[in-house]
Each structure stands twice: as structure tokens, then as C-alpha cells.
Length: 132
Image (cartoon, rainbow, N blue to C red; front, top):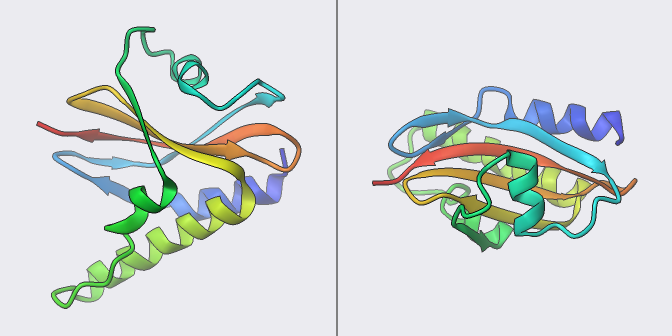
């Protein structure tokens, strides 16, 4: 897996939190080269979640839509946060192919944004949300 991609991805998530009922950091995730399709089974294996865990998918565009949207009420802090999310989206979409977003769980949700690196390894980021 290219070290420069992982370095760029790490820089993009440094200090970035996914805000829900809890504020959770993003962490790097990666798997082996050529590890089959990026699907529900791959995410459950990567996460060590039980096989009966509810998993939904969404597009990268859908995931980032609200996070990268400028709002009239945004102050300096919110504008900076939007820019960080735009940078994360850029690093992911330019560095990975076959990018997918998986949401595993119902109230405590594990969120994975993963794809393939140029050398065929699975890579991306993971965070959590609490949604009651």
C-alpha cells in the first residue's frame, strides 16, 4: 500500500471528528491486497462485528453532502470543519477506486469509507456515530 497515500489520508483525518450524539475521531483502516470484493462480508471481517449486524451502504457523495456544504450561519470554526471534510473526500476519491460507505449497526453505528489502493489493498477510514 503506498505510504504517501496513507500519510495523506492520516493528515486529512488528524483532528477531524464525526459529530453525532457522540463526537468520534476517524481512524485509518486497511486490509490485504486482493481480498475479494468490497462488500458487507468484507466490512464485517474488517470490523470483527457479528455476522448478523445490520449493514447499509451509501454513496460517497451522500455521506459527504451535508458535511461539505457551506451554510450562511457558519462561523470560522464551521468553515474550517467543512474544508477538512472536503480535503478528506478529495484524498479518498483521488487515492482509492471502488469507494463505498458502509454503516454497520443501528444505534451505535460503525461507519467505514473504504476502497482499493492502486496496488489492490483495501484502505480507508472508520468512525462511529450514535443515533438514537
